Amino acid sequence: MEGKLIIFSAPSGSGKSTIINYLLDKDLDLEFSISATSRPPRGNEKNGKEYYFLTPDEFRKKIANNEFLEYEEVYTDKYYGTLKEEVERLTLSGKNVIFDVDVKGAINIKNFYGKRALSIFIQPPGIEALKDRLICRGTDAPDVIECRLAKAEYELSFAPQFDTVIINDDLKRAQENAYKTIKNFIGQK
Image 1 (tube, helix red, strand yellow):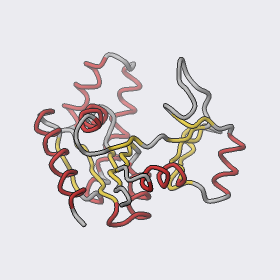
Image 2 (cartoon, helix red, strand yellow):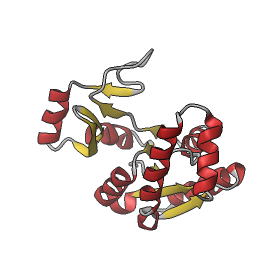
Image 3 (cartoon, one colour):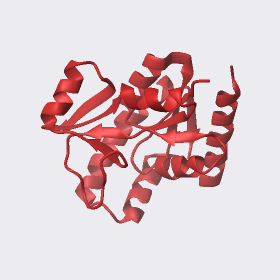
Image 4 (cartoon, helix red, strand yellow):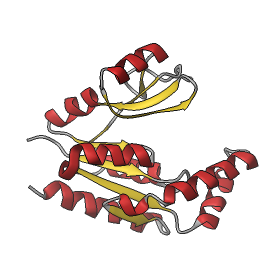
């Protein structure tokens, strides 16, 4: 039986990655979708593990051949996207595929797969809480935090287009809600 697709999106600092990592350790038979990028590997990143690393020309050729479910040019010649071939490889093996993508990518994947996909938006309890989380992370300069907050307000406007919105005002509860939602979805015929 073909696997299903679980699509996560959220503003930076909403707890999405923490929730996804929690779910990957559960009995949901989830496999993480590895994205493609045209940026060079960082640190110890390996091709086929963190990303599929392509040159900008290779990426554009795959775009021209309609090989992506979704993609975006984030900066000049710095593309990120989800290869159809990667998703089919996983679902045909019976795995349920989990995605961590931006809001537009999430909507594109949901539209492509329809009822085989569940889209989940992780929402922070509010912009001020999100700002506090980003400051407490200690990884971004104040101007970067302001850019992330501006982007978050834009991303929050897409929440009504998702199948489910989970407000992460309590991490344990948000993790449990995500688990129950996915477990029910996977169990549907």
